[in-house]
Length: 429
Image (cartoon, rainbow, N blue to C red; front, side, top):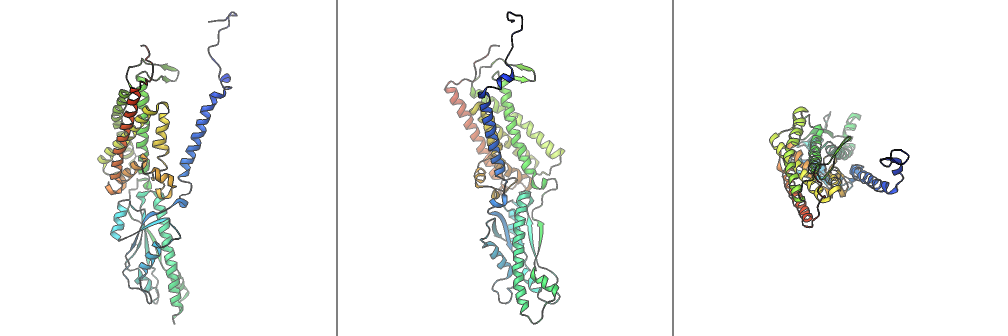
């Protein structure tokens, strides 16, 4: 319609005019700033200083020394070293577990320890031989790593074990130096250097994993894929159903459509979304495994079990997303993002050991989905699918999480339906 002067009437406000409205800025500014602040605290808070937060990292301590005590001592050197390490109160970084060699290997194979410090059976005998003529061979203490527990966790355990072994070497060196100082035959300069630091420390892999295992990180990234598949798939399905049923607009580029509204209550809508999630997740999980294992060549065993586990894990996340979206409506995607991703990543223990993160994240790890799922994936990929490596707990938590999602989702939508809270006034065809 034109005005009296023949000039076309304006079709709408300009952006420059809207920029002057404070209320238009308020909510996006507050939410964006709050999200940036929370994300920074949550993500960076878990990894800023792992060494400062490190407490009771599980490490096996094996004393296999069977040698007789040195002259004037009541215990052999292996027993002395083990006792000194366990009773050291200057650091709480390690949670030492005194085990036999067989027990330690079992703990490594089950992913229950991040490494091991092994004192050999002939240790005291080898040390005693250093005081004899022309001694050149250094006794050896072995540090075993467990790369299946993640590169950082294995590295921390290796550093702690190596430091303990080196400190033991220096302590023994002082004893040997004092003993030789009172002897009639004085050692030469080379022997003195050997006696001052007599123990060699070697590092070996205690539980090897494949070369295509990302140095112990493929379990984390694979778990992240499963969580993202459930999270994004759930949201895509939710939006697609709402659009298809006429409860949301469909806008692609310049095209905008609105389908006729289908008369359906919230309970039936949630049921439809969950059934579709169960079906479509089959495809997404299959494609994830195809890309990861077949195309990229990721090291993986127990393929049928991995597929079944992957499907159940991604499905549990997808059903949880549908329940949260149904309960919280428009902010449901934001809530589910915090539940499954924002809080899940730093508390998963997959990249930084839980023993090296602040207590808040260790608390979250008891129920946050990503930690439960990553334990199961790690057990299947690296630890021969052993139940005591975390797989049993993972299956249990998947079942509990799925049940909670179903109960919470349907309880909320049935409550809304009983109260008569309709989603939208039906639109004519």
